[in-house]
Length: 421
Image 1 (tube, rainbow, N blue to C red):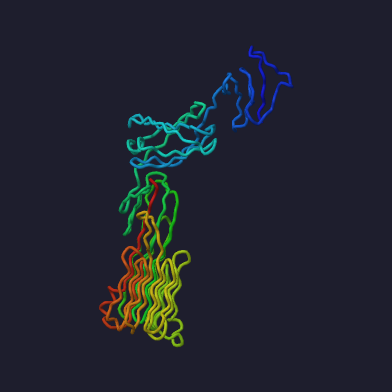
Image 2 (cartoon, helix red, strand yellow):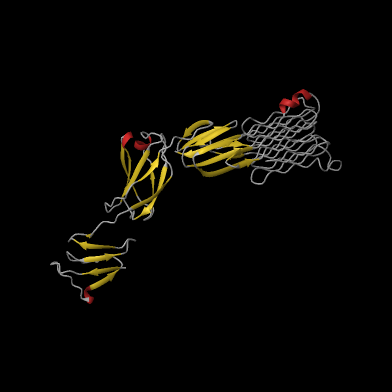
């Protein structure tokens, strides 16, 4: 509501009650010198009419109470300003750093009377020195100026292999390392564990490494990044599960390792390994594909007949069940993610199962899964692809055992971190 008080232009108030008008909008036919108590804009002020427009008797003064976000030397970022009396438009944000010769104004539209976001311009981030304090003030549309607050410019994060694409800076870890942050940084991370080894005799493909995504705001400090190794292949014995990958207190579970005919069941993990190629009536515990971890992967497919191994589970799909004794199951497909390049790439495919007979290999799942072997191992199984978390292919028979230790390994994992620039 707004009160309207008339004037006789000579400075004498006309305070007769019937000459006071209350309205939710500015008076439609004012006279020069009229006063209007305006509370419709969220800030109560007294205005006077100068014959052309309504003007405030005194400007509203903004206050700047906090700044969240970080100014990075060498890259754009966004700051959120909190305070009071920002008004509704044309808020001028001033960046001042004398030793770096920075005195830059940016005009933004506040999101509310108490909040505004501003993208740090290149004239600031390209010239500021890490460790220097930048003073920030705001001037509202009344030309009221706040007192200043300061924030310290930080250097960009370090660690891994650093690349960029439109809008993002990316740190890729293909082996373990340290990610160091020098100011509040909102990050997104893809964490993929190592894939499991393929099975060693009439066995299923290895399960893919667990895959998860995570987002958080990091404060200054060092963060340990662990990239899981692929599971080591076995010979006539079973291989091993993939190694876990960890970052920011989040753990992706290594892929399950394949079993061994009638002696060892398929292993569970981020994704589970495929079941062994045995008769369910003889070895019910060994024919079943192993379980994956909820939210990270899928189960392996079951074995079938007397020789067909199931496909290892992938991050995007369960492994295929072996169609028959001579047709092993394909590995489950992986999942896509665009953090590294801005375009989708596929990670964590399950390994294809192995079979004693048959005439073609079971395929590994998209995302680095290895192919299984067939026909008494005349074609050796292939490993999971490095830095995808793919499961290793399952072996078909005990022949050519020298190939097992290197040919059925799982693919190593990967950790990818990106943040907006």
